[in-house]
Length: 141
Image (tube, rainbow, N blue to C red; front, side, top):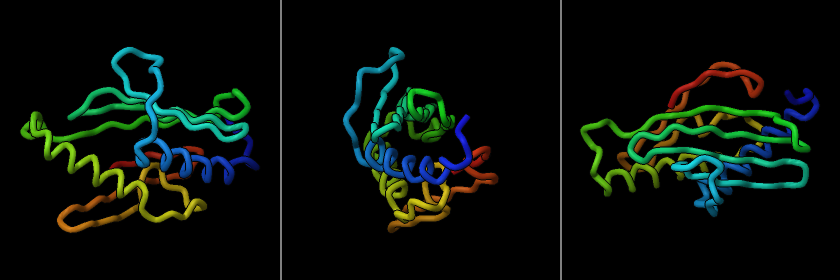
């Protein structure tokens, strides 16, 4: 894993990378795994890849390499309840709101695995809870 002196740099990089990829509607790349959607972001010695599969229910992994060495990864998953599968309008509204939540609170220094602790916009509400830090954490949205 990564040396402690690079943790602040990693944290800032993660925020910029996630803001430029999924949350920022970044350009998709050719996926390494069939059936997945993948997005990448590069910055000097840092490389980020977000890889997820599914639509109404989606599971994915964010991975960061520093100088071609694996530095950090997280797994995530979730989605709409089965009752709403097939409702493209609700899916679009939900994912658009999720992107806004991820981009909210542009403090690059505070660790946040995906989005801020709380964000609301009209009738929509996002909440994230986690314990731990960038080295080891567990959370839910």
